[in-house]
Length: 90
Image (cartoon, rainbow, N blue to C red; front, side, top):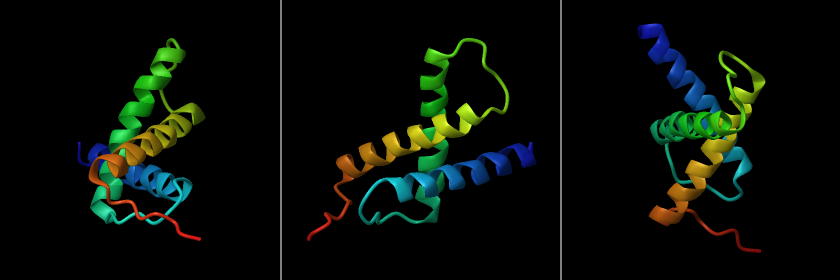
């Protein structure tokens, strides 16, 4: 049980960091919020991937891709709701 939770935290951290790198601009969120964005994004990505793939279970590259896409979606929604995203000025 401990290693499952630790795995979700590490997986969420990686997906959250990649999402923060993909979304342009500076994100004013800390490490804990990055993990939350990654974990929630993994759930969203898994749900969306489940809609398009039937019976695909286990560890697959589509799981990583879906998690990153889900984390990007969650990060963009979070930035829109909170207004914490700084605009890039040229």
